[in-house]
Length: 190
Image (cartoon, rainbow, N blue to C red; front, side):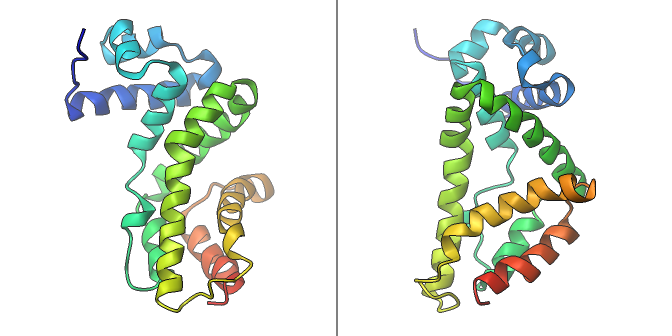
């Protein structure tokens, strides 16, 4: 039997239902039944379109991203980082950070969630970040042998996780832009 293709609007509604439920109940308590009820859909449709809860969650998170880092090219590394950080407003950043904190616990219990997140969210973001950094190398802004290049993802993820932990404050644009200007770019020699 052929898959019925959902319209982009309907797919977006389903993804929003998934993210709303994730925020409300967390990954453990999220069920396909609850998503189906919230989205006024059938459980069969969800499984037919996405196959599993981990895949649905990862694709909902991916859909929520404002675009690929690879698409950002302002002509300078600093400009690219600033453009990437201003794609989402502070409210959306806080909501996304809360989701990721919740999921960071769930990935330890659900290896299939970790795999889906890596394949559908982490790896595409890493590829986009690498392309962004390689363009900076191509423009001569960065040395190709800079030892800090391989740690940029760690620095960025660390900033996201540490702000709440250390300062008990949500991540916002001002903090991330200051972090990039004060820590990331100097580490890269920019």
